[in-house]
Length: 94
Image 1 (cartoon, one colour):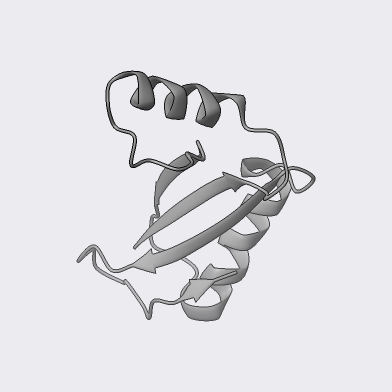
Image 2 (cartoon, helix red, strand yellow):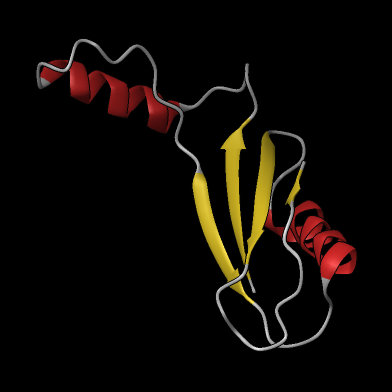
């Protein structure tokens, strides 16, 4: 089982990296880009253990406690069966 986690700055939070990337794209002639938001992507691979709703709760807890700063960032994740023995159901959260 794999959890794919996407963490992005909340709307309204200053994103200097995104602004710099957008500015650079414009300088390179990619004027069709209106805005860029820079975030993080994490892939968590699990050993056998929790499954189903318990796994969803565990990943959500990891995001809230360590992976994302709840004041300035939002997160979402999906659980994906990677074919490992013991993989249970998958499901999106938040």
